[in-house]
Image (tube, rainbow over all chains, first blue to last red; front, side):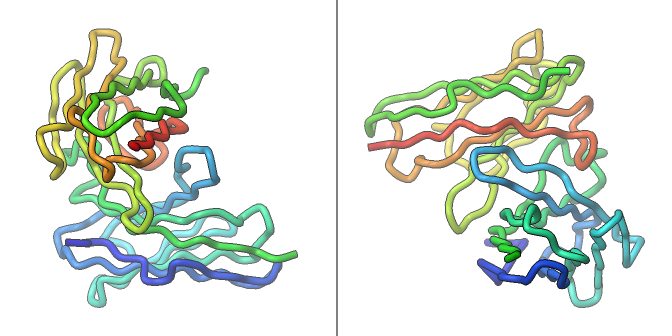
Length: 116
Length: 114
């Protein structure tokens, strides 16, 4: 049962344009969401997160949007840079780490390629 | 300070064998979580240890087990290996079991079962 889904296995974008990565979830009990970036031969690194009480969170070029009614979140990268090329994972937890004890539910990942 | 260290980085085992993977967390971190990454499945949570106690467990068979030592280093063991156990195994460390900026992943151990 895939509770967090990233339906686009890959995305190709031109440098300077916007990248939009999407994620859907089914468990309405999730209340904290995160995006991670992963380069080959490295572990995932944290990018940005959002609590379910918000609908938007920004950090520099990265913005995460949450639509609770649609159970959908998205990551916007503006402007996209070649160094952003990586696999992006969305993840969800039942709380902000308070009692989830290290457990995140991840999507399958989306490979982003930014062309110069 | 040093990051999360996983050893070995690569491993090849035969079906039916067992394997032990190691994770040394960031100094001062007491929580270690383990994940399995396979193509098309993303990362799946295996278990979490804090102060030598397993606090949380994912939906994996009993062949997957772990432990944590008093210095917070953690090991995971897979017995009676199957071809489907081929994956990247990642651990993450944090002070209390939190996420985001508080948690850091290691580079992973790539296990291949033949």
